[in-house]
Length: 138
Length: 138
Length: 138
Length: 138
Image 1 (cartoon, each protein chain N blue to C red):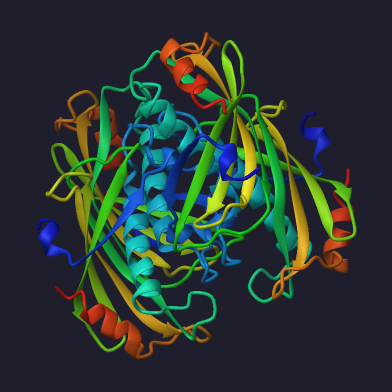
Image 2 (cartoon, rainbow over the protein chains, first blue to last red):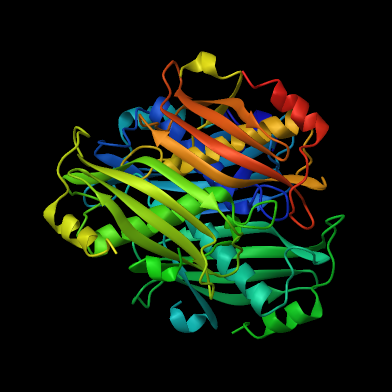
């Protein structure tokens, strides 16, 4: 997996407090980068309305393999691809790249189930979101 | 898996900003609960010196399955068990329980490789930490 | 100011990632402790409904003086007092205490204006919240 | 105060979990933007070595006035000016601007005291950092 594996990217500014006692970005923050590239894409490309939309995406599973450290100050490039695309759920694949590096510092997955905001039961992926996701199945 | 699956617990106070736009604790924070119960245990039971110790634990892999939501205000009980215990690495298993619930809201794994602080190369798990981990292999 | 200055307390578990590169709890997190003791109080004692209530509290000003460091692992005791209580707004005073210490590691203020959730315009403090706040004017 | 009040800027990507239950960036995160524009500047322009340098900057006071909300997805432009510059300490002034807006969504201050990493006692501001700060006294 390198940068060409991912059809969509978002550059995310690192923050001072991302670094932990060991001087590198804490493992927990990697999942925040996953969350951020995904939801930024869903809002901008898929028209997800996080405030009032009837359908929302809930995370039911995520995983990350850590290969190299990241470090503030700097930027991380988060690459996104839609892997398995089901009726109500999608499995994203994510790669995190240091500025200027072609090999990922981390790779992982993140599974969203789309549910009705009110009763939190699974619903089909809304058309516009599905179309956006089909555009990044790479 | 229920509470009896975990030999060690830490109660963690939820914080206002753990809740995200959808009104429940954000998926990212679950990994912070993993990180917290593990390092609290390593420091208190295993004598890990996070400031000056020659050996530190780095996360190389983690995973979480989300079953039920958590919500501020309240407390989450993080249960910890040492699964596979190798020469330099340990795979922890974690369960997160709502106050009063016997079924986990989430379960996951977290793999630490112990490395030398300076060159970040793998080293054997220090004796005192190994003993502590053996005490929670459940 | 010591512990007796604060009529209400909440113990908050520190988390691994609260510690920053310099080995102590990052200054930003202190404000999260402010936010947490305040909203926990408003929900439990004042009946604030953070999900569906018509009135919500917005922070318009906050300040913190840092005196001593805090450090994971451990617990911080957040003390709360309602200072100035106006028609729509309240100024809280907060003290953060290390476990076992009578002198605050930090003190600060936090001003909430209560507004209508929909149009975000100021409204009178709801009765039940006002009564709760009057109980901690110390 | 508008954008012309600040000689230095850093664009910071907002993250999904910056938004809280009320749908806007949580007040706590504003201080993380302060921290980030300041330390990014100290590292890049002032040569601060956050890992091994003998001198580090500790926050002793901060304050923020919140005027308008910020919201994920998007970017916040953090403007920085060095206000009062003493022997060991500096008071920064910060303005946070929404993309495309000339009026700040928030303004605040942040006071650093430079101390020796080992004993945490105040020391004169290192020359290179002082020169960098003098360049943004606006």
